[in-house]
Image (cartoon, rainbow, N blue to C red; front, side, top):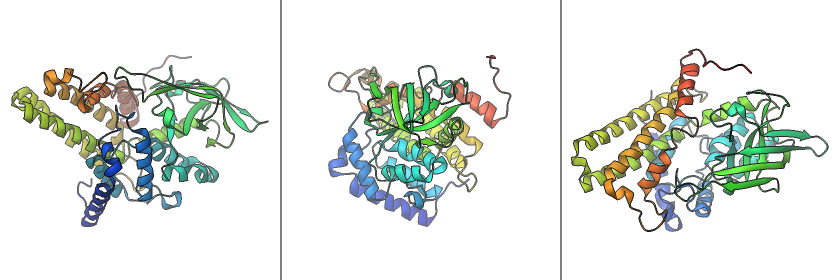
Length: 397
């Protein structure tokens, strides 16, 4: 496991830090530490402009192969970039779904024409994506999707009908990758396909889901005879499950170290408040702060271990524990933040829904053990895929 960096890597780290210091200022100063989980509704247009600035500096898609428009950075330097981005307070990436999920999937499974069509817009920070996976009856159980797509050979289009839910930033996106059932009568993971669907069309309706915080970065998306070109299927019909599972593996990649730097920023804020308001003198809170720091270090070392896999970039089995680990840790950090704030945690900053940063973090962290696969589902994945234990019994159809 690599836990240190070479002199050349540290020089690269300084290059990243210097560029961010020179560019994350002026019109973008207000974006520092904004737009992350629970705050994704903030400054969408300014964050899109920031994506274009990143692209002009060559800081989008840094791990992509050069033939796809990326820098082809090593795993180590990708980690450094994500760490420094978070350390500098880089805003939540509007292009995250395209750069981290859609683009690599198209690069791996898509046709040459799909790569020419879609990858340049992601690299340039001008094309934004959302993820059409979850449905009202298919959250963690993705194989239960009911959205259907039928190929209309006369018009050369797929016609899509169904509903997706919890679709982050669908209202800001140009394209959505959709898992749909394309084989009549199919059940489970069979008969699914992976489609690329334009959002700006009459057959697509986006309905915001307003949360208790008054924000609505999540959406319901309805497809009513929505269309996409016949050529906009990734892989072959029926290969959607295989492609979807490969895509989910990308969520355990190098950006995890950047996520942990964001966690470190939050923990630093909490520790600073505890020292200021006297909460650090409480031995129980002091121990919880120490436990949080220890947990974050353990998380980092496990991430370095899981990223130290084979040279083909494949992740190790240790990656299966990551979602369960960080979701549980972060949910506990949210509770710790409110306990450190004490009575102040119950006060709004100015008016309705004017939550402080840690208040927003606390509320959003309640969902951490649910989205992206519940903690219960994660434990099944660890047991079955990593440990090789017998699969959970299922009722026969």
